[in-house]
Image 1 (cartoon, rainbow, N blue to C red):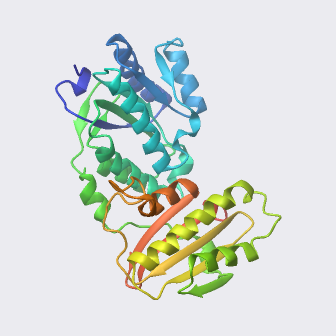
Image 2: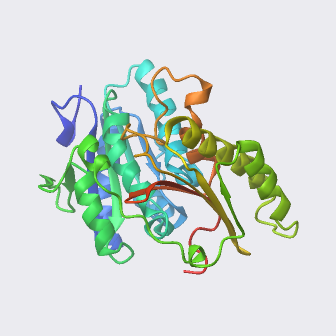
Length: 321
């Protein structure tokens, strides 16, 4: 049986909480969590350290509230996969409703907001089968106005500090929102001349070209380079198989990151959830973009008059901005 504002609702009840102070944040968070515990519902918190500590103190360390790891929101596709595992397990255990209070780190509002905006929209579809009520918290001091506009377009409802729950007039269903042209934040590194440009290369040739120029002294690259190479291979393979030639691959390097772009003359993937959710019944060869979203520190997809560009980043996407 569903409780609270989600009573009578079927599937995912997705709300945003736009707060102006810690007091307003707690006025929304604490009743939401305490009511979940009182109803015997699995009640989960996914907050960064300071806010998690704030909630613990305000709820007197209630042991019925479960705290998820702070790295859950490292990458959107990985977050969706992990939440689906959690929700599947709880539903199989008989949960009639699950409550989750979550908040992205403020770093998500910079260079990588485009994929987090896609995440906030896509989860309306990704979690639709579960009896989930979640509140996504956004503090106005740290959240840019353009991000808040996206928040209202990706969340069907808003929860307020006085117990109010209102519909968002600007909300768009995910298929519509995700099909819109997405503004991808420009990377200043790409204003420089690329290290190299390859035209119609094989995936193996691109991997070899990356290895030939990546300096050994880049400490951030170490453990990430192997995953980045998988993403590069998948990106080039997809452009060859599903795009239209010529395929151009470019690489940029700074002391903070690697950025590689793959451009073809096609329209890009038709699936609005591409990269965030695996294609239904896809074989391993059809999971490339989804894997890339879990192996890179940022993946951006852009369409313009010149075609479709996939941009893969390993390292800090916000550096040098």
